[in-house]
Structures are given as C-alpha cells and as structure tokens.
Length: 326
Picture 1 (tube, rainbow, N blue to C red):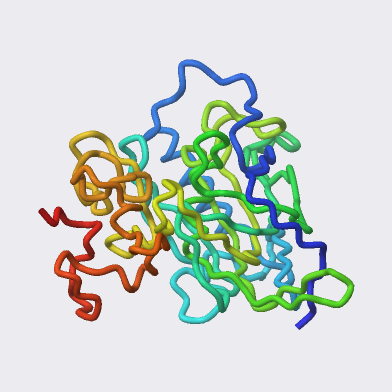
Picture 2 (cartoon, helix red, strand yellow; picture 1 turned 180 degrees about the vertical axis):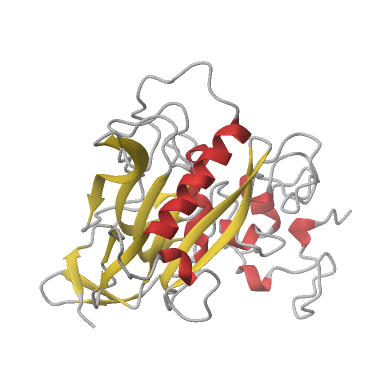
C-alpha cells in the first residue's frame, strides 16, 4: 500500500475551515423552509445521485473519483452497493434533528484498523467536499455535483463537539462509523498513515448548512464528503478526569444534549446535562474528579475506579462517581 506522508502537527485547538464549520455562513434565507419538507427534497436528490453516479477508480490510498454515469453507460452505480457484505459497502443510519428523522447514507470503502471516535472526539482527516444542486443545461434540468474544497494534507484536528466553532452535524453523525489507521514516524520528521478508514458521506442540508449556506455553498444544498480518517484524539470536555468516550453509558458511540424532559441514557443524575459535560455525574454534591482521585492525589484509572464499598474487581459494580454513596 502506498504511504501518504505529511508533516504532522498536533494542535489541541480547533481549526475551522469553511467546508465543515459554521463560522462563514452566507446570508441566510428567511423564513427557512420546513425541515421535513426540505428533507424529502434532499433525500430524493441524494438517492438520485447514488443511482446515477459511479466510482471510477480507487487507488491504493483509497482516493475516490466519483463521476456521473453517461447516457447509455454500463458503469456500476453507487446505490448498487447498498447493504453489501463486502467493500465498497453503502449503509444508512437514522439521525433525529429538529423533529425530523433523517436517513443518512454513507459509503464505506475501508473500515480502518484503529479506534472509532465518539461524536465528541477530535478527528485528523483528509477530505474533499462537493455540494449537490439542480442546474439547467441546454434547457434540461440535471442534478450536478460541484466541488468546493479539498484538504489532502491535514495539519490539525477537528473537534466533533465544539460549541465555540461547531462543525456540521453530519460529520458528528458519520465519523463514528469509521476507524482510524496505523502510523509510522519517519526519520525526516514526517508521518506515514496506512490502513485508515475511508469512505464517502452523503449529508442532507438539514445536517449541513441548511438555509444559511457557506461561502460558495448555496442554501439547502446536500453535501458529499470523501474522507480518510487518519487518527483520533480523545477528549475530556468537562475536565473531570474521565475521557468523553468512557462516559458513553450505553456504549453506542454517541453522547447528546437532549431537550428538557427527554430521557438521556448518558445522564446519570437526570439533571439534563450528559455525563461528558457534567462535573458531578451522580449529583451528590461531590465532584466526579474528587470521587476518582486517590489519596495520593492522582486520578484513578477508569478501569480501577471502585464502588462505594471499595470493590475494584467486580465487573458488574457501579463505580462510586455514578451513585450517591451516602
């Protein structure tokens, strides 16, 4: 397998690029369309794209080139890979936002051999972005894909949960479906990545920029991202000494802020703040960080956090930061 080399700069701060962040919106269209109505249009366009475009070539580094099937062409459409047992594999998942249940397609070209990020972790990824729109060519309206940005040599992590510079929702929904790769540090200071997860996202506008657009991306445009997930960075958003992914109580890879009154499986004390943002997970008035700090002042490793009675060996125990001990 060919190796991809570049200078690897580890920065913990979030870098915002217009293609996947929301800090450079175009003038929003008001009033916005109803989410459910626009979603139906987006889904129709995305499924038409999947049925009329094909993957021309996959290089050793899983570079993707997706083209429209010409009239009378016999190329294999992307949609033919739906629920395939081998790669490429087109799958879909549901994501609920703004009271709409979105069907979100994603194409796995290679799963990756490392770890999957949670929807709150940092990702080190290369990507290419296109948007879908209907255009008239010779008085005939056709669905077209227009390129808007590409990053072949990433220099920084993106953070899937970052309230000050939020990424589009579609990224946080789909990156957890992939795994990172292996890497080798080279004598010249570069890093080579191999066996990383790679694929394509097909994102409805409601999980993208919706009515605001961004730079050259028009409002209500579905997005297509080809991605390579090189590495991930685990995050501790609330600074309690427990990494976010370890506070994913139901283990589904996703932690969310939910509307008031909605049962949240990742909120131990039911105070409306999921554990990954809650400095006192069990609501007992003692901070989580204090409850998992040993007598010598060090943080107890997550696997060794004791129950209220001090037990550290029973795999079924409830760790003391998740239950009121007194």
